[in-house]
Structures are given as structure tokens and as C-alpha cells.
Length: 113
Length: 114
Image (cartoon, rainbow over all chains, first blue to last red; front, top):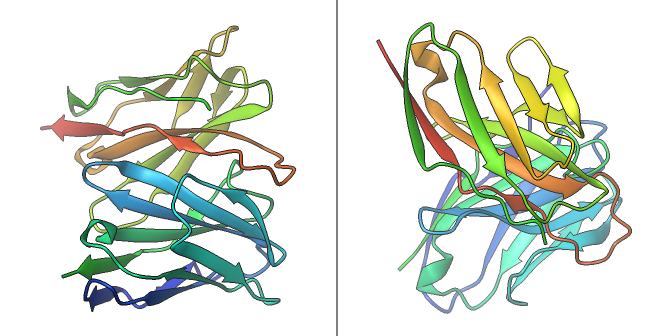
């Protein structure tokens, strides 16, 4: 079956702009989690959506938000971009939640200039 | 919040067994321990998951002592292709919706030498 897909794969934005990233989970997976990966902070959990509801949230400012649609596809939005938001954003899907086996997408590399 | 600690890097030779330990002193009762492998420019890939004692699958074993404050990922007979970063993740299986964070370890860069 098809894996987790993320679009776009690469993105360059300017400080102050906003960005929307998209994630299509594996068919049948209702849980979608988002992570930020940077060399300095490593892998950090942003939030998890399950059946269109945000179920878990990490320690990120309100500029980071997300949503999930009825087909389980998810989007993540970052408003008022800062240089420090430059990172690899990973999406992962699972049947029941992020503490279960997760399948990660290839990530979106966001560069903020 | 379960903070996790892993060695930054490890070197090994092909054919050897490698053990990577993760410390999670504040692990909660409902938390499971999961290990992931990540290659450059790819998302992490699930290796193994466990709650207590020992779990084994076709690629690895996971040892968890009775106090569950640490866990050890064991990779038998590593090859060059096992060179990657290995992460441990501690988190609850079921979330009631509260802001319970998932904690990834900082990752261990395993380098397998010929």
C-alpha cells in the first residue's frame, strides 16, 4: 500500500510569511502526527490529530496549527514565520496514535530567509 | 514528562552485536517505549516497541528492566547498512486528549565500520 506522502518536499519562505504543509496518511490510518526536526533540538512533537480532532499537543507557540480532514489528510500551518522555524517537518500516520507504530513521510524541508 | 537520554554516537564493526541504551527516568505507567531508525533525508522507520521485559522481532530485540527507567535496543550482527541514527520514543498508548507530550531521545548516531 502507498506510504505517507508530504507536499511540498522543499519550500523557501521569507520571515513574516505563512506556510501550509500537507500530509496524506496511509489508507485506513486515522492518527496523524507532526514533528519538527532540527540539528539543535532534534525531533520534537508538534501535535496529533485523530478523526479530525487535535488529541495531543507539544510545546510549540500558537503560530503552529493544524487540522485534519474527514479523509484523514492533514495540514499544518505556520504563521508569521521566523528564521528559527527552518527545519524538516515530518508527518507520521498510525492506526491508533503516535505511541503505536508510526509510519513517517519523507518530510518537508522548510527554509526561512 | 518523560525525558529521555541516549549516547550521542557509537561505533561498531560489521558482524558485531550493538546495544544502544535509552534512559527514561520519569516514564509513566501507561508509557510504551518505541525505537526508530533514521537514514539521512528520510523519515524515521519503526524498529520495535515494548512495555516491559523483552521483545524480539526479525531485526532487533528490546530489553526493558523491571523498573522501566531504561531500555536497550539490541541489533544482532550489524552490517554497513545499519549505519543510521537511532531514536527512542516514550509515550502513552492511549491519550485522553490532554496535552501529554511525546518525547524523542536526542538520537544515537551508529556508525558501522567494515
